Amino acid sequence: MMRKILAPIQADGFGGCVLAYATSLAFQHNAHVEVAHCRPALSKTVAKAAILPSFMRDDLQTQAANVSDAEERELRNQFEHFSRVLEFQIAAEPSAENPSAYWHEEEGTLADIVLHRGLLADIIVVTKPQRDNTLQVNTLHAALFRTGTPVLMCPRVSKRPDSMGKTVAIAWNGSLQAARAVAMTNDVLQRAETVTILTAGHEVAHGPTAEELQDYLKLRGVEAGIDRFEPKGKIGRELLSHCDALGADLMIMGAYSESHEKEAIFGGNSQTIVDHAEIPVIMVH
Image (cartoon, rainbow, N blue to C red):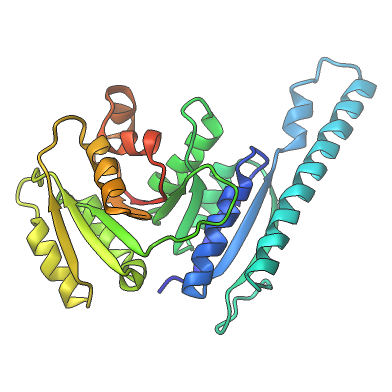
């Protein structure tokens, strides 16, 4: 049961997109959103300027604090806007009857916040990282590799999605990661109107086939079709192409069965999805 959604945000221009998808997900599942806003540690900022005279360091700290305050106000306004639109209850304690949300203010890095709060969340919502944005990449990697929690990687937009989870595609290769992704997203699959298993027919050795996954889902009350294809290029690109053809508004997949360092360098399937997906993707490592 999806009851707690972690939405770690910072002033990188994409906090609104995380809020949009997290609140939409909470509305669907009657869940609680824990918004964790990350403020940069001013003490570290000032420490880097230790060679400056004390009055200049004080000015630097004041300016940095003012910028952080302005960024926080903007993000809080977005948070309150989504709460009003969706008629969310803003409360520290989750409600059993209605979706709810609460704002936490923390100092440090998003990766630290994800590790602290993500271990006790049902899903973590992060923005699709830009390759050259180290903070965004580190946040995704912290969520995937250090928590074991499903991660919803959302497109870089700032409006609520018109739909998410009505037409779901499962990227299947019979791996441990793919099996965990299916097992940990039962709530999502139960709510879907259409579920399709995408497979290139290259399951891992001794791994379950797409047909066996189809039978397993049927036991859970989920009717799923199978779209089997022979890849002509990178499987990651083919998966996205088939999602587009199906009109999928969400993909579920196991992530980084190869090491993420190897995939980042040589271009594995998971890295291709991270780089090019234009729909939300739930990833599980």
